[in-house]
Image (tube, rainbow, N blue to C red; front, side, top):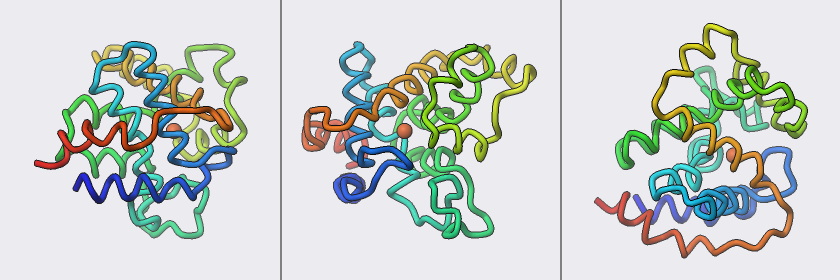
Length: 185
Ligand SMILES: [Fe+2]
């Protein structure tokens, strides 16, 4: 599983991340690096590294919100859900939860931070609509009490910041030991 995942990540270097100007791999590495630099624990770093596996490591017909809607099959779901399900058997529950929650975290921040929506990129606003739009007050109240919400919100902010063209990061191989510890079981 570790080899398959690392291979999918390496191949994602040739795909652009949604409507952004960085590749899927650059985006994942930048997101994980921001978490590491901020002192996030290893689980949260892993969630950041893998939060978009549902965009590039699964059959595209299973996903409807990756910018290729024509490829989505009749039972397609959001990339965050498909990605979380792919990871769930292998990673700590908190990691899979944060991956699943990273779309809801955006919907939550749009509802609770007045200028958050204004800072979103055009591509991110487009997927916000596909993912259910700004949260209602009832949805906000339900999510607000979740103990891992701060982690999901932190991931979301690093996600938003991980779109810098040409930014230097450590290579994928630097993360391989962490991935192997989880997925080679
Ligand atoms: Fe992302």
